[in-house]
Length: 250
Image (cartoon, rainbow, N blue to C red):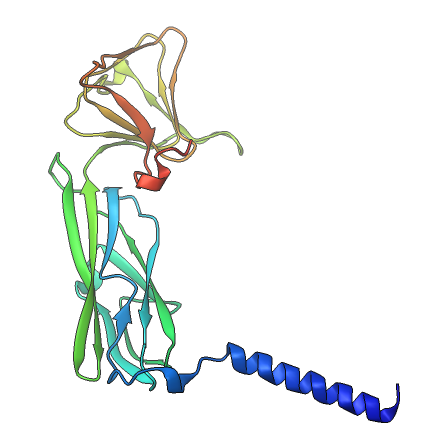
């Protein structure tokens, strides 16, 4: 290749690259002047049933600056503060309150949300609500956070075997363990729950039994499991993830 042709090739490469970069860059001039008003990907972040003391799945929403000027968000905070059962991660920072976040024209940031429900003395589902509050340029806006919580009977492992063997606990009639499960509250099993030989576990109609990941109910030889489900009042066995999209996941 001659020197002249080489120069032409370099010019073409530079020109092509410039066109490509300019086509990827947001054209701020095409954005409206919104006066610094923020917009959001949703007005409500909702969690399905969350069992007490168990953390939730993580959900997220986006905050947008739809205007053609940089915006300084004076404050982003969880309305309930540190006493809230919700937790935030704001633009990569695990905090329930941050100040002076700059958002370029046409740019956005993520807010991640989790929730843990504290035990309560009710046998029925209850709702927990809070909000994420944004203050920017004298404007105050918010995104609602809602979670359904449920008090439950929990069985957690108290025996830990060798590595690779799931931790377990015993349901032992000789030690006064409750051997009849009723529909008053759901039952949540962590690890392996073992019904000891000689014992009978009876599960009444309408009872819900939920298993954490890789958990199971084991009935030893010589033990008995009686499940009194009825066609119109079933006993339900399922996982602790109750979101709609998890319903058909093994």
